[in-house]
Image (cartoon, rainbow, N blue to C red; front, side):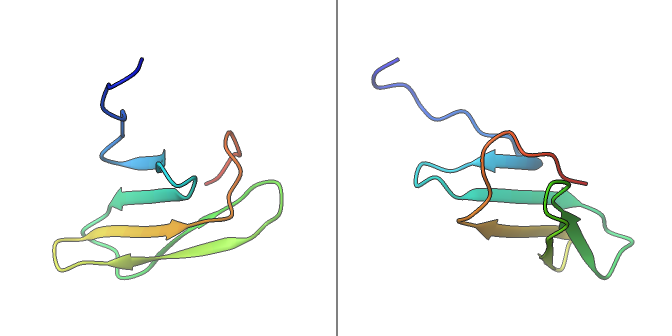
Length: 68
């Protein structure tokens, strides 16, 4: 679909145009949050903003990998 806008989730995991993955979670009652990649056990710490929105962008997560 040439010329169409990139579809993107507001929350969850989204693949960016450069191939990196953006994780975004709203959890206003938490102070810390991380996602863990199931296949490798690697943890990715998300940064919290003042509204409880956590996010992190990482260049090295393959598409269609499970996380929790």
